[in-house]
Length: 226
Image (tube, rainbow, N blue to C red):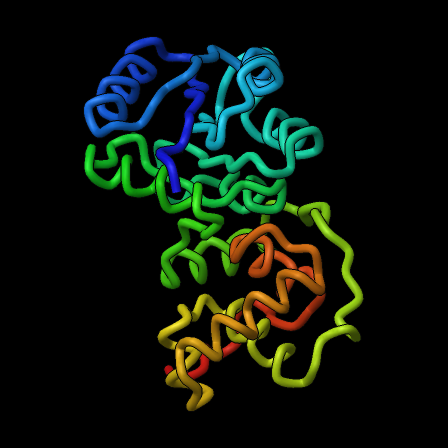
């Protein structure tokens, strides 16, 4: 796969400059920048990037609304949210809006480049522990309900696929799924791919959101294998 083309959306010019320098030095092309959500939407329309680094909190239009509009128009684009706090109250809403993951702004240069490449492959940047903390705190927490991003009929899944989706909702990686279900990782990947196809899910982030929104997983549930 060729290197991703990136748009950086952040209201701080120094952040944009820094990220541009980091990515460019590692062979990743930054094709545009934006200072707010509205500019980000226009940049995506004009430049057709593979990945958008999107700050959550920006003036005029925030990163959440911009993400919703960008992915409605360009569903193949990947959005990686930028936040100052690892438990930012908006992170779950960002995932529900279709973002493929999130990064702290103090991310190391190597991690930033690796994250951009990872989401460009269609994967989600969500460590299992982060997934559990985020969703358990915000899915049904004190911040009010988040409007579902997707509505899917789970009846199209086989019993095994439903089991895999439930475990994904708990934040298990493919390796952990293989151990829990006594399957090979290759078989797990096949199940995951079929779930994505049947439910029209973009990536693992959407699968986690869906597992909570449909009640497959609830905050406070015991994590399998724990």
